[in-house]
Image (cartoon, rainbow, N blue to C red; front, side, top):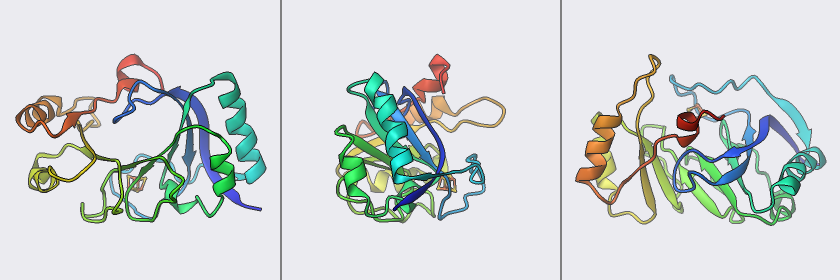
Length: 192
Ligand code: SF4
């Protein structure tokens, strides 16, 4: 029987990337294979859940919200997907993953969003969307990928003092139309 380390499961609006504005059941897994100094995920907060417990929790939320997508996030969700394909296929809705791109992603995942973190170099070869937290010093890297397939989202950097570099990110996107702006809609409308 598969078990999972789960941080939280909840229903809300996807606030980031291509599916921003879409109702979604979020499954946030605990643990990551990287240790980014800026990471704000509390990896120690974890509930051990069996396959059956995870299935029941997600189905309960989906039952009341038919048509919602599922977003697997973390931490690094690709650490824990095992070979548990029947569980995720059984939800019968679009399965999205938000990954750092350093680990393989099963082919039953319908939408792969990669946020490159580890020196900006490791990206799983197949992805649907690249999502970058905008840092001007990485512009040459973003531009090196502008002809790559898939959606390329630029997200303003949220600083600890509550400010962002939205003006700079907006200027970059307007100058480079193959990119699109992603503005963390959930924070703007005040939901989790
Ligand atoms: S990849 Fe994401 S979850 Fe993992 S340590 Fe870095 S910021 Fe945290």
